[in-house]
Length: 492
Image 1 (cartoon, rainbow, N blue to C red):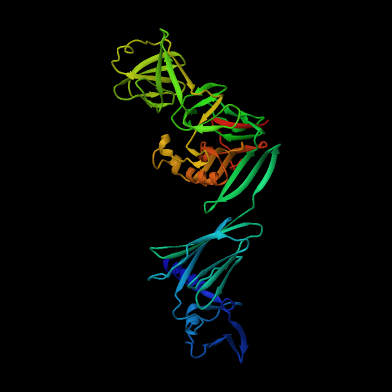
Image 2: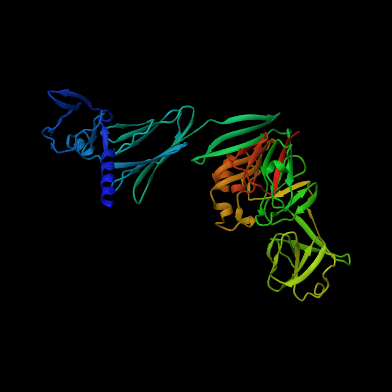
């Protein structure tokens, strides 16, 4: 079986290593029972059943097919390919949006090869100083052979945008030629001053962006959803013109991770990352300044840190292990104390916890099960709406991507994974964008949004949660997923 497969591979390689005579500038005609191949300064012939005529070795591979494909050994023996022109084999990958050609170069010191990129309205043309011995047959792809090398041409599908790049690689030596072709941008009106725009931007690979773009003064934005409940976005706000997924949440319990303020009331407390904040007009994004405190049964208020901002007293609102060694943790449901444990302890959904130093003379033994303990918080300055996500992408018209400042661990999948992205962006003139993108990283998305003119931008939850509805239908991606929070856009 292995021998048969090896023979098949050999035959396929042999078949591929053939070049049509016309691509080499050779004319073919019959003369006295022989096939003659000729161009200026070159003439050789083949007699069917006998083989090649002198001075060629008769046993060399015969021409194949109606287009008289010729083996490289014949071409070199006949002087069609210069002796000093090296050979290279070609590999390719063709998708709906791109063509990649890779020349595997022969051993030795490769020549200086260009590193270029650009745009073209029609043919992509690449030149390689090699004889391409196995040109593939693809629609739109053609080869022109010359004394100095091979010109490779590709005509992308009609009605596409075009971009190309070429670059060499070492170890092993290769020459890569990329051509990208995508549909032109499409815009669909949604309401006065609000459109849905689908387009591709270059990274340099094509990256799909689907945006709802709302002109200044044409929109209002509200956070929607319920902490602890996963829903499809249209269920959160059936009357919304457009909906974008919101911030992060604990997948097991649907507990929001990060600040969530609606009508001035905190529904969820900060985690320590950037938040989208607004009062009804153009939003801003930054790590929020948040003040929190607890009130004990004696009426005293005690300042506390929150979640990722630990302090002498720290309130925890996100499920998981909380507290540090050397602390005690009071578990609270609503405003009712349940129990006190030595830290760390597992915090369940629907509860919050207060950690304090073990042995503290004020807190030790002060609160018993059933006592009242209340947690309060407020933004400084206060805003009507806020929704935490992050990282920040653009601020003040400059790239602001610094995930390490927002408690994203270096190399974390949250920032390094190539996946669908979602973001909110705005321009200096007051235009608002609800953004989704094809697979990329938040850093690349930040660069593209800045290049499109964003004055500010923040990444929302990504991956499978990234989704955009417009005009009552899902416009990105192809499958919906229940989430905990969202952003609802209404026409003003």
